Length: 129
Image (cartoon, rainbow, N blue to C red; front, side):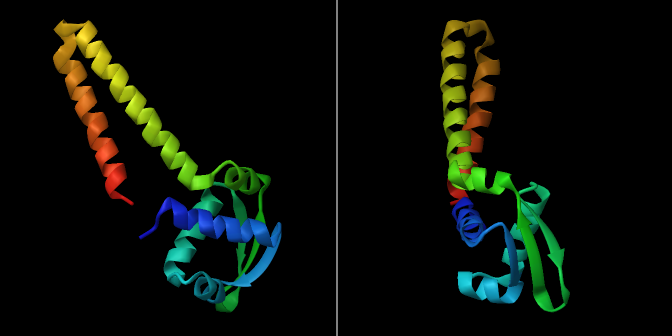
């Protein structure tokens, strides 16, 4: 399964190696002990998020140039921190909605529905680990 921790491991491995990297996708997947296809889609996501640019070569070769954003992102906790921040934000929002529900009983059903949707999101995120 693709997890924030796996993405952080890959991005950290790349940022530790430098700015301009030349590697074989198959070999890197083997070194990281992950499926080649999983590594490729994660690298594609990194490219879509402008954390890197990729030039693909025949035989699985890749020439990657990391952006400064990649180094900043991993330094600030990466995907793991982003997920934790999302969960904390949703939990805070849920508490605020529950307080509004008690402060405005005439809108309680609306607030209850919103709180239930937030709880569903939190449950979904917790089960993705």
